[in-house]
Amino acid sequence: MAAVTSESLASVRSTQEQTIRGADLTVSRQLFEALDVLDSSAALRRALTDPARESAERSALVRRLFGDSAEPGAVTLLEALASQRWSRERDLGDAVELLAVDVVAAQAEAEGLQGLETLESTLLELRRAVLSSHELQRALTDQQAGAEATQRLGAALTPQASPEARLLIDRAVTTPRGLRPEALLERFAEQIAQRQQRWIAQVTVAKDLDETYRQRLSAGLNRYFGRDLKLDVVVDPTVVGGIRVQVGDEVVDSTLSTKVGELRRTMAR
Image 1 (cartoon, rainbow, N blue to C red):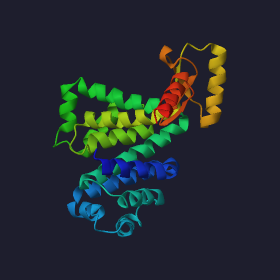
Image 2: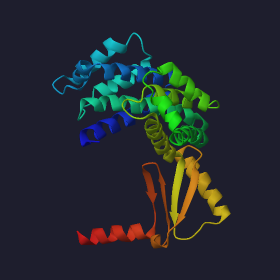
Image 3: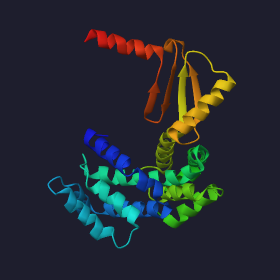
Image 4: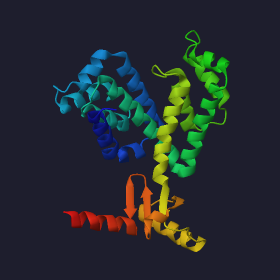
């Protein structure tokens, strides 16, 4: 992913996190529908990614196209994307798809880490089933079958799927956007896995922690980050002392090795 696109996508995901968290599956469906419109119209993609147009003009075009038919949350996210710069026209569509999956993940996240793990597991189980059967692969890529037939097949293979998983499975088997369905399922699962990292505290220490300390640390981290985290403790003697905690992109590092490194850098200036 080119730098311009990466920066734009990171900006939208950061500034629109509350919108993503507050959206429901209807918003995700509408984002996928908007993606279909984008994929079907090169002229529209050019208009919404043209750097010669002011961002306000591109946002206004989104409102004209989707403002009367989509939920406010979907329109807000589409406007936020259209206001950014993109390395390629297709990158805008890829970003819409990514935010649609983010909304689904945020819904699953209402059940905490378990909700995300269940969603990822369902997607990967179907992917494995498809990869293990040439017959299924042919059925899901048969151009004569139609979307309804492949959707019914996906549902038959995952009868216990949650509404969140069902939405992503339906999308993967009916509109894979040039990919094989199993490849899109894998991409969706990878994105879900990335969001899971927000619920896992990767703790690095010089020696293993006893149960009492683990419980105290867990309670403290839960209060600090505002959610019930799963501890993943790694023993690394090179940290010397102290503790390093990473939750998603946020790092709290009080290890002695880090402090020594900082001192060395200071002395070298």
